[in-house]
Image (tube, rainbow, N blue to C red; front, side, top):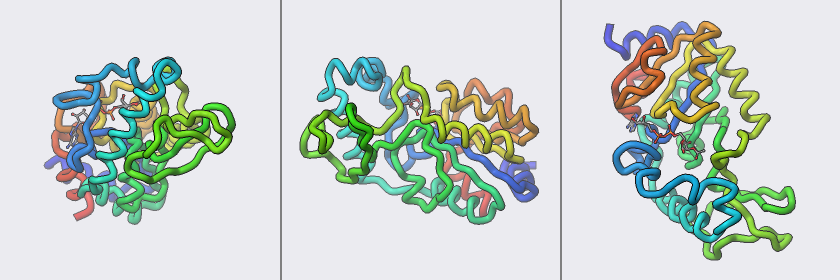
Length: 239
Ligand code: OAD
């Protein structure tokens, strides 16, 4: 059987589907990935931009980088991969989309049950009070932005060295444990704990299907490792 036939067969028999996406699904929309050719971490070090210490040291530098990324993301569109996941959700009795992406393209493609385990680049959070809010302007005019209480605001994303949002993460763990099919799409599967969801799903009996253009450390530990672009593979599952 071709990979798409096997994956379709498992999906059609599944009651509960959980998906974990990474930067690779948005790559074909024009959003840079983190690793690999052209990856963001090729030119910048996470510890200079995306850690609590980096932000405390130089909030402007960190914000300029996030503002630049907001500007790119605002000009791109969800691709066929994002759209196919929204269609799989419509057809599934239970469906959870866990994403490491902060770009909001899954929302724009029509997915509903989304767990953003690494946060959301369109959310701002006050560094002093508990306030969090959405600001959809492609680029923020004033950097660093401020909360109405006067304190500096930070991007509503998870930085290296920080824990994941607890309620969101607990739901992701439950969805990984409960699913019949787990799709692992466009992620290098090196950042934990998110990557561990695939192993958790498999240990609870799910069929795990990896869709990636390259091998990852999890490729040898999944039921089906499908070498394909997300924008080509995912639509084949709903054709
Ligand atoms: P990476 O940049 O680490 O990996 C992207 C993956 O997508 C690679 O395995 C590529 O082979 C694959 N890929 C690229 N184009 C693809 C395509 N068209 N179709 C399918 N696969 C494709 O991105 P993530 O795994 O998302 O964390 O990175 C995980 C986390 O590391 C991010 O959420 C971010 C980053 O540092 C934080 O910021 C906390």
